Image (cartoon, rainbow, N blue to C red; front, side, top):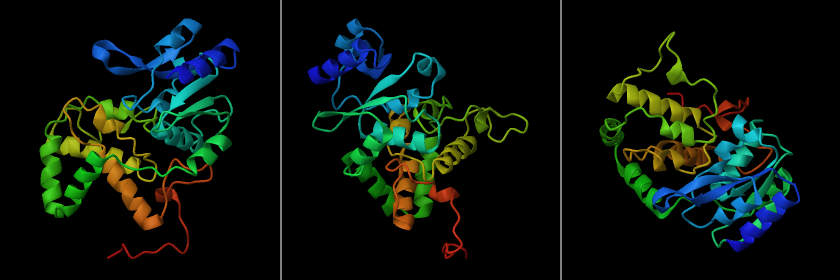
Length: 267
């Protein structure tokens, strides 16, 4: 933690960056995103296993980008989010310094996206044990049993869209759920409408999800909604042998056509 504060403080002092995007302790000791803009803010920065939010979501927010060049404290999920946003041309590739933190708490300063790509080339992303167990359980179910499971879960959805707000890849300026001419998805919470919303979002993330799980973690009614895009991400690895948020040269497999693509999915 002290090393993080030392590096962040030096970056602000030297005017190399205008803001450090990181974590701090909020109300009831809960970890919350924090934006250090002055030297006296540095003492509030923290790091550790509880710092799990994907901070990449703030990089394209206008009120943050208006502050000037940022440094961002980045766990593996934030690193992958940054890479994917760069691939999709949503962030400035040059105007950023990345403070990569591994599971052991070691910090590495990355000055550009080429450094980030090299860093990620030696990292093997893995799901946490709890999520993997839940996925294994769902995979053992029949399709009918899985539908029953998700219908029961979707009954709890209150359409707060916290899942969308927490996701760094949900950056559309106007979402389908906000369209009313025509209205594709009902505004009111209902089992069918809730299923439509979450399945649409999962499909939009196909080939793009960086498996941070934030959409599920922020759900106020504890729907494990992150398992939908994460399961699709695993299927992408099986079908195409690819992971996202790793390389500057990657594309989105679900929007890439090749003449020799297999068509064995057609009945």
